[in-house]
Image 1 (cartoon, rainbow, N blue to C red):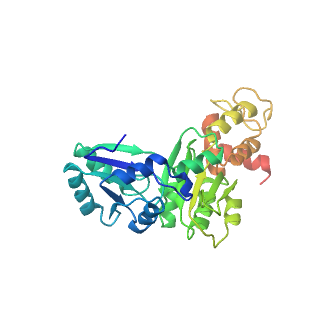
Image 2: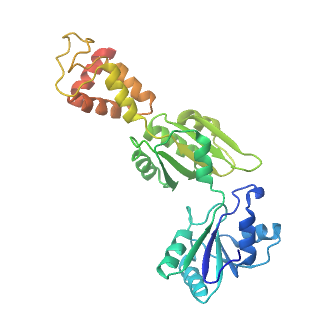
Image 3: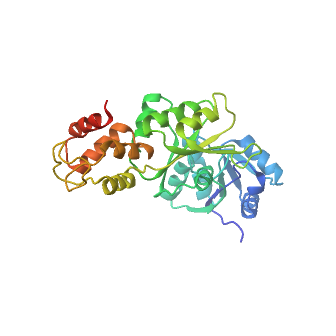
Length: 305
């Protein structure tokens, strides 16, 4: 099927390995009137590799307003335009989504030509049993804002996927450990390329394995919080009940209704699931129906601290 006129095509391109370019993507790029590219030099190299001879214009973060208007005008005049990013699917962590939005507003048909995507590729390599996932793109550069962004996922059961540069990946991994505890994660470097590396480890270990002078582009997949399932397990196994708790010293460990059995062990279970200690105490206190300070005092007595 030939390309149509007055259409915007979203064409996925390889994230590294040129063998991942689909036959349909090659055909569409060869048949459209114009290719709009995030980096014209990269796209020209890709086109030359596949023998595609087409006009390539720039569309990127710094010219998206003027170039976007120009592209919409071209399409409304009957041109078929293909949008490509530096790698992967356009509109995913790049200004392509704004061009797509413009086209929808102008009544222009948008046709996807699916291809590779680094975020989804890393996610399926993680093996995490996620209840959905969140794509964060690049986290804020400022450490305080980065920690705030990460802390939002403290008890979220969904996996979180972020992109990171080699200059900041070590700091980001350490901040993940600070904000979310020693959560399990996957660090994927140079996906589909010659030096592809996929590390699955706890946040602290991953930071040391990546090192301070890494090379390449990174995708980090953070396992979703197990706080809810771990809390449920702790409630069932440790005898936590909602409602009042009998005073300490009255048959501690008996497991009757209203008694918190071995709070230290329950907190440790939550910490192993990646829940920060104070968050674990807060969650357990809520499940037991007692003030947090009371459970904290019980924990101190049980641990002898």
